[in-house]
Length: 197
Image (cartoon, rainbow, N blue to C red; front, side, top):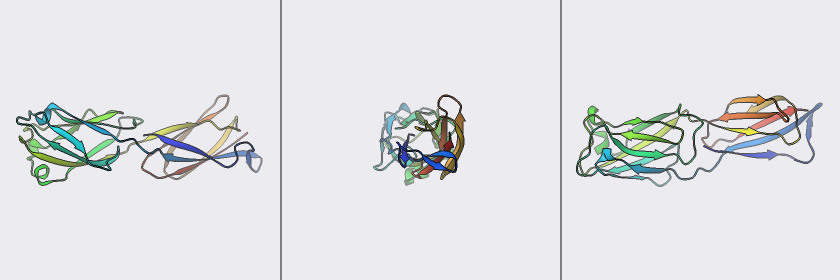
């Protein structure tokens, strides 16, 4: 889940706020590449396809099962186009057609193997029906991504102000100092103001 960083203001001549040098940056989620899905044995040699417009964060997957879907197996693996900061996110799966909505409780698939690069939909204890078309919507909650900013004209950071969907900012002392900014990459731009010497 990449973030793009754009300096705001003149790079060659530092801006001053009082006696402090100031640098401003706009942070925006990078346009994600398209995620992919790979079919697994849990659908009995199924085909899994993503709907047009699906992204790392939300979308729709269609699975057409084969003749003998086994139980407790991978139906599909969802490969994120952009890696997440951690695997501490939640995948929400909801039925999007009648076949998926009418599955019994024991046949309902569940998410498994949530990682920074992918997550898996696994068939339930009763398995999916043979030669059926199932459609599920998905959303990812609590996905975060971060970026490290190295100011061009500030060697020692005194303060960092954030405007927008920033979750955290951490200054690392060095030569020069850097600041790591963590945010949720859901299409909203943030602005960072760095003050120092």
